[in-house]
Length: 359
Image (cartoon, rainbow, N blue to C red; front, side, top):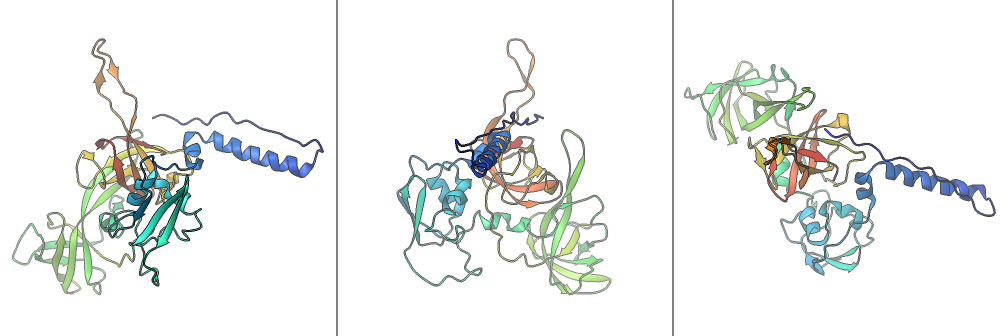
């Protein structure tokens, strides 16, 4: 994997004719900040440059129900993930994530978007949360319960015994017996299956095990030994031995502020919870890197096509073609060594095994 090497740092010094120490120190500090920014490479420069409006942007747009901030920004900005830079500095938009259906956005300058309330009304937050940053229905199932575990972590969790009528494979509305439930007061449970074990493709380090969300169940009869439940939602087949964890109210969808990571990072797209090899817009993926690497919810990553196993048609030599940008994704949940990200746009199919870098 390529290593990012900081550019050579340059030191600047300046003094006025009058030799005022304060002015010289101020200029030196500014120069050091500039030098530090330059040393971070293209990612930092990208993050600091002013966002640009699209040449074909509309002059105005009325926010519609079902819009997301990313989609709205896509109509105006070349890089829609950078909407906070233009909206947070706009005095007409006091809170950039509290834009509501019916609001009018008007372009008033090269970097100004004005908001007009067409239907003035009392806004109550957080109950009336306005337009979400990204589609909430897609990521909501990934915001509760552990989705990345370590080997053996669920060994003590409750588990499915069998269906009431001796069914082996359970689906929606199936009633079943379960054992080992710790929280007998809980009304809802998440059904979990042990999924893919993920390792770092270069070092071989074990990064975590996927805990697959198979469905949801509701308690019918609680018992210290064998309880009775019913499947109320099913995403996949449920079989004896699958685990149960009490569900908790995830609360309102958190607000994600898209931004570039604070440092240069790179990693790999490891897995799709859908079990496919190619993903596109609004697909969820698991990527290498987590809190240990400084990744946070809201970080935007650029997917880079990583193509190997190619041969030169003339010489027959093995080829590793240059990486090509194929899309953007935004991190929405982070574990120690792995993170979940949502593909926000894709110029072509993104493959499991592709790389990611700073946007």
